[in-house]
Length: 245
Image (cartoon, rainbow, N blue to C red; front, top):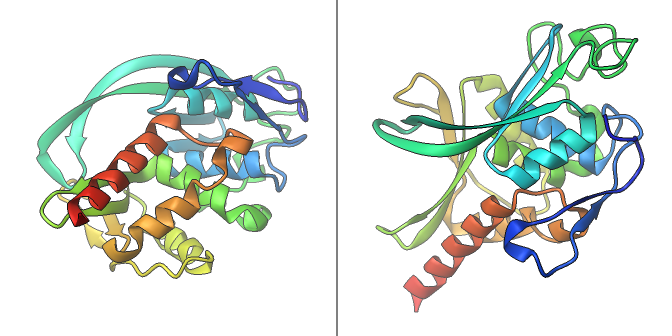
């Protein structure tokens, strides 16, 4: 596990000539801190917590390295093909980086210094508790978007689409509450069922540009973001602007 509180460096492969961002790590991955908020957003969006440990999946190598720096664990790389959440007739192939943190991962006191999963920000029913990260809602939302969100350019309307997809309806309701509290007035759709049996909702296209810009604003200063996801957002925004012209 990385030394808590020490800065670590993570390089963006597409920006090899730039200095890699120094990431300030929390002394405790459960305490209120931008990096821990980003980490638990990812865990909630694409992970699983149990007494055996934590497993979280990322599609971006740099962000996976950040998650490992925050809480330790082992990273494995694989390629997977899965159904598209909104339409199971469409498949997509992606890189997958799986971070596994065992309950006995070099820590005599258990998982992240707790005796079991109930000591983490997850209650007995599997619901996440984000109160400790209330001052870092942007990093938490960014982790959630990168864990269970999608960004796309809608060629039919020339707009950017931002949506959140997850099997847990309660988690998406929590995401909506976080969006309600963000400084950008961001309307969104009602929760709908996906063809794969989960749930999803989309941010109103009219505010997707402003919301997405706020979500990734100044992220390079902290290094708490997935470069590939930000590039996709930027490309989508450029396409939308070109469409208007």
